[in-house]
Length: 124
Image: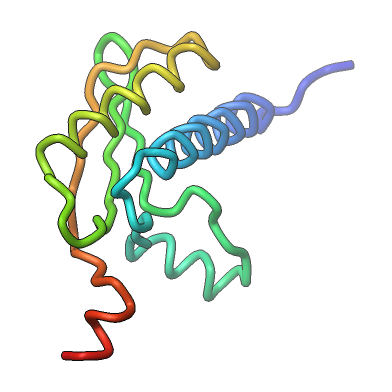
């Protein structure tokens, strides 16, 4: 059976979705991560296609020797951000490399906000 020209694109798309999902799960497991943030593109996808992106807040890029991962997240109030960032980087890199065999060249963390505990946010 002859393959179509879209086969390669489909495989790449599925692979990117899987890598994003693995990275998102690894990041969420780190104590102090409140949530991953939607990017503008994620928000558009959800509204236009009526489809929720489980791996929102994850952006992949191709690097010379592997892939780069950017993670957009909120942290819980009182979390030491440098320690959290280091732990998220390590967790994501280890998870993606062990499951996919891809080489992760960088994991950039973008802290976009702090989530207050419910009691504190009700007092303010």
